[in-house]
Image 1 (cartoon, rainbow, N blue to C red):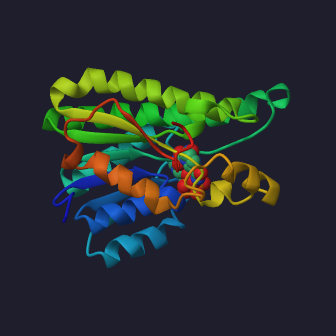
Image 2 (cartoon, rainbow, N blue to C red):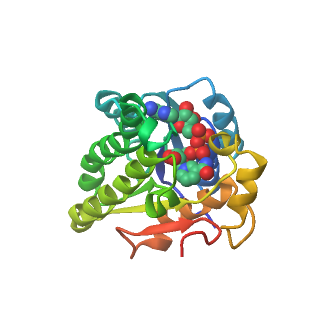
Length: 247
Ligand SMILES: NC(=O)c1ccc[n+]([C@@H]2O[C@H](COP(=O)([O-])OP(=O)(O)OC[C@H]3O[C@@H](n4cnc5c(N)ncnc54)[C@H](O)[C@@H]3O)[C@@H](O)[C@H]2O)c1
């Protein structure tokens, strides 16, 4: 079933990890995809995978923190694809440290990318989507935004903030046919989590009822559902994809 047939999607942080998996799953379901990343060289692999599904891929270099760069990306999508049906705000970073040792740069860089980046994306996608009277925005939060985590005050604040943006934007845009939802992944196997020590991994597993780390595709499949018409009566929601960690 092609859930995104004739749809056009923009995914941030598309070079690797969860972002790449989202691009591929969307292409498998009929969408043409634009990927935004600060690392455009690494997007070649994503482009190859999307094109192997017979869909178009547009590679865009932009930093989500910079409003003018995000604006230019959306303009490129409108010029190239003619419309924007789906935006996935996925780009994100961690800069972990204990609260008492965390410096302003560690705090601010995470807030800039994970929170301001999402604000920029929702704001620049809002205009074309409201004009079309349709669109689906999916913001990638985290289980840590729901539960907190030692060493991650910056990251958990940014991801909790994403839920605030999601719910307020959903209320603002519902009447214009634009839906905004969030996904809260647990621990997913990507570069972001590959440095876990054996002890940390063991401790983590004891908190995951389904007893495994998630795959990027586990998240991508839920993003696909929220992006597609299957979820057309859902807005302002947070869906956890975490093996049961937060319940
Ligand atoms: N991996 C996990 O366990 C996990 C859990 C919960 C939430 N998440 C969230 O999922 C999202 C993707 O995570 P991932 O694990 O795939 O991470 P990753 O580090 O593998 O990939 C992140 C991507 O974002 C890009 N990026 C970073 N800063 C950017 C910027 N300023 N502008 C544009 N692109 C930028 C990177 O170049 C990279 O391609 C993030 O928002 C992350 O916080 C991940």
